[in-house]
Length: 206
Image (cartoon, rainbow, N blue to C red; front, top):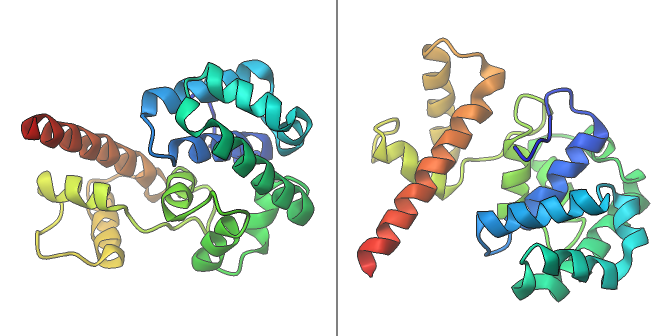
């Protein structure tokens, strides 16, 4: 994803995905979010300290170059707030935040406590890709994932409780002979199918 290699869980790679997840978490197209992340990479703004050094005006310029115009001011403010909190509490190291968390729920709470710009959607996007890498990264599947799984017949329609659905999907993945630590790949495929379903439904309405 975006050329970020999370497998080794290195702090710099985890941070880069964190930045990308914040961009993807807004109500904006995946294409624009990806392009905007590319602008951050080209500018070398890929750490909490680099974000703070860049400042509000510099962040707005990067966001605008990526096409993130609708949310540029708000996102620049949000990035400064989040990264200031991350530096203050954990020296900019998200692995330290993970180590400090007691359990999966506490991990999500700590992430969202970094700033108002991190809600359940952003936390879910971020943690989904760290499943199997961070032991405490166990986000519940999003409604998009659940709809995709039901559409493909991987979940019965009556199973609506996210935690039970997660267990059922993980068991199905393991029964297929796949390693548990690669479940995030299955989940990512379900996200893509869910997005395709949503686009199809939008076209049908028009």
